[in-house]
Length: 436
Ligand SMILES: *[C@@H]1O[C@H](CO)[C@@H](O)[C@H](O)[C@H]1NC(C)=O
Ligand SMILES: *[C@@H]1O[C@H](CO)[C@@H](O)[C@H](O)[C@H]1NC(C)=O
Ligand SMILES: *[C@@H]1O[C@H](CO)[C@@H](O)[C@H](O)[C@H]1NC(C)=O
Image (cartoon, rainbow, N blue to C red):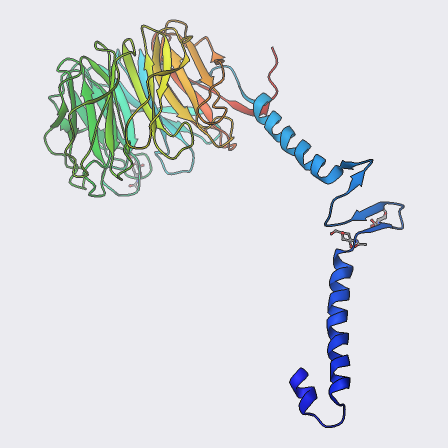
């Protein structure tokens, strides 16, 4: 605009300067108008105070103060509002000594079904969810000898969840192929030589994109894996360790942050939680002990509890009634035991999931002497609340798990209660202020 004005005959340089000045002044003025604070009253007598600056009333910065109060209210809500759980709702009342449960959508209808094993009736069954939390039983097998453990994973890479099961009497680990709508094949053998297996897990251990199977077996003190060829054909067993005494539980997670799945074990007789470093190809280091202070270690779980981006480890141990965790420094070096609770009498299982929806995982426990399902709120950074009891009627409980069973968007809790012969769930009715 300036150069045009200069080149043009007619209005001289002086006039052009005035034009420029007017433009700059008006731009400046309009900006100033936008940011100028105003107090106006509308037709309804409402007073509008507009400013991008500070509003002081009797010297108090009201905008800032309001923002702080809102934040404090949010924090307070996180502290006092707890998920409230209904009493026990039935999944199965006809299982003889149920001991393991897992939730997955087995029939592809968008809700979470439940798989369970029960020891004394030698049954692997699943319970079809109608979407509202009403379950109907479908038996996969009633002829496994002493059903012990179940897990669900897509083993043949066809997009649906297959079922893996272990049975202690016949030393078998088998899987059942899902046809996509919850129709299952008869059992397909993974191994018949795991001596009294107690837990199974599925994870890609050799980095080839399919899910391999892990097992621990009590009587041969063995932690082993079985390589999946991708179609659900499994190799013979590959030993990871025979150095644990009565290993109860197995879990897989990337503990050293190198991108592959490492393995965890919890063993009963030597009170040990240990891990085994994967080199990426499914070759494992010898055991790296996390603790030997978990008296009768029965359950192990890994998740980021303190929000620092690495996988921490949780344990449940039966004889010291303990739920504890071990802080990972990111490289697989773990802190000494940090006790969450010793109020879980005969602790049998630990699980972690964000129950209160505040973005960090909370911890669940099942304990069989006090028939208790309880949870511990993660108050951030791995600081846990005292025990919140969900029920003390889970008779001889051995397993706890969580999933949204009624499709209302929050997580419900379920348990397998061995002595009570029940599989039950506890509906989360949403966040409320607790009352006694
Ligand atoms: C004043 O009140 C009337 C009736 O409630 C409403 O329709 C109108 O939008 C209000 N005016 C302003 C500026 O808020
Ligand atoms: C004050 O701010 C509100 C919301 O940004 C806006 O709608 C209103 O027009 C503003 N009033 C004045 C007088 O600037
Ligand atoms: C899966 O099996 C069930 C039970 O046998 C059957 O009703 C269903 O039609 C099958 N679904 C498919 C997709 O083959």
